[in-house]
Length: 278
Image 1 (cartoon, rainbow, N blue to C red):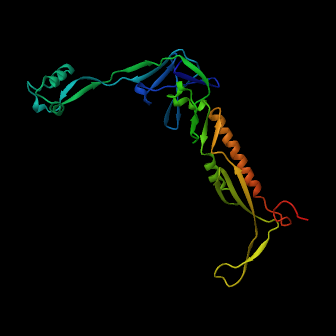
Image 2 (tube, rainbow, N blue to C red; image 1 turned 45 degrees about the vertical axis):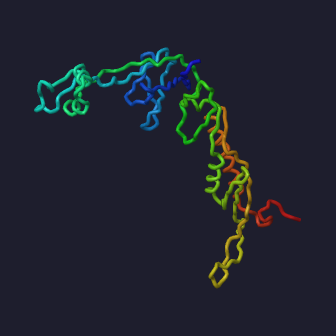
Image 3 (spheres, rainbow, N blue to C red; image 1 turned 30 degrees about the vertical axis):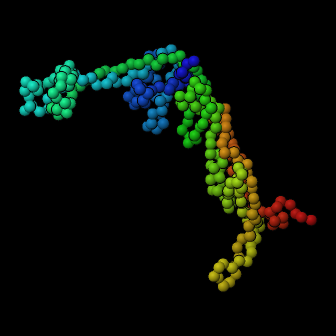
């Protein structure tokens, strides 16, 4: 089984690459069959994804090579002597360190490294690459929990292409419903969301009312109270992340429309019930 995958979407091929030791590096360059690849960023943040117009036979990453130590230089000219010459080669340095009689703090207190740039390192990213249809996951705030095949369990960059779920839907809808017009309260019980909606009558009705401490009665609008019970799951599942996000949006729209429909002004002839008793 291959342990590397390439995403194909609308003629673009996406490869997830990183530098030596698995770290994302801003100075990394990537090539597909010798052609430069385009890094995919979110704002100024690296994602690790690289795009190309081809399914490459050869993927390479190029990074600056580590600095190479060419010697050691005495930092205190007045200390120069036969014992402590102005410069030491890397070999002389190692000999002094392991010869005994001196500790590292003495040498480091007198000498500093002399380095030079080491050019670049080119590393081939081995395949074979298994094609998956999809694109890198969007940065939309949803947390996707996937049911991954074991072979992919160590590759979270491919999570969004496999079946799974987005959690927290009921909590998110409860918070949303409380912000909608005419909603007077919402609470969860036994996996259901109970919503109270208060609406005015059309034409408006009023009733006498005396506030605490007042000497005279006043009037206030008479409101009709409606109760909704919504069955809302705690998580949205899907064959992949994109499908679950679409289902999240669809169900969210249904809930908003249901609450909005309950917020229509009430008819005084039926007391808001929708029918007239005879």
